[in-house]
Image (tube, rainbow, N blue to C red):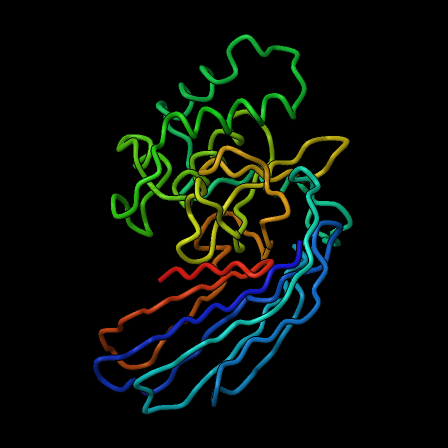
Length: 277
């Protein structure tokens, strides 16, 4: 499948700020399931700083802009050829051992309630393969957390999302990571894009899902929001321990100011176009 992406992120500051510095992880890496045909990240008049590929295989680029800054836009555009590998991340080069992703963060910290959900999901699966256990955990998350926008905040934890029973793909991914850690399965947070169909959810901006490490297969993606493993509709950007660590855009500004964030994503394939704002 050939997918075209146009992703615009615009910051508007109520009062000018003295300086803006950001770290971008907006470049997808090639692997068995995706080949980059073209890709560009336009940051206008911002100055590009250091760029490097981290141990997880993701390219990070820093940018900065001296003030007064009242508006800053990032435009991502590109074309990616994808293939359905049933969620398996093949041919991806990284140096971080899978065991590092048994580390929990505030967002994915286990609680009694999360442990109970994990135990219920794995009931009767003693001796089952890691892949079967991973699928069971993903199903449990989808059953426990109904997809609903506006019910949670960026800082909502897995425990809080489970208590509320509603959330977005970020929350469902945090819960799945927490359950995987409880089951002693390495898991990480993945960001990217989804070419959504009529019954898909979570494609309002960049999408999120989890990858769990399965011996003999490696990293396998699980999208609890849509009840599937990533297929040819998905473009993988990067990963981290949680949403904050894996964020495609992170930054700071010098000078206090209220900001407004505007995001629009357009995904095109085979003459079909989707625009989410």
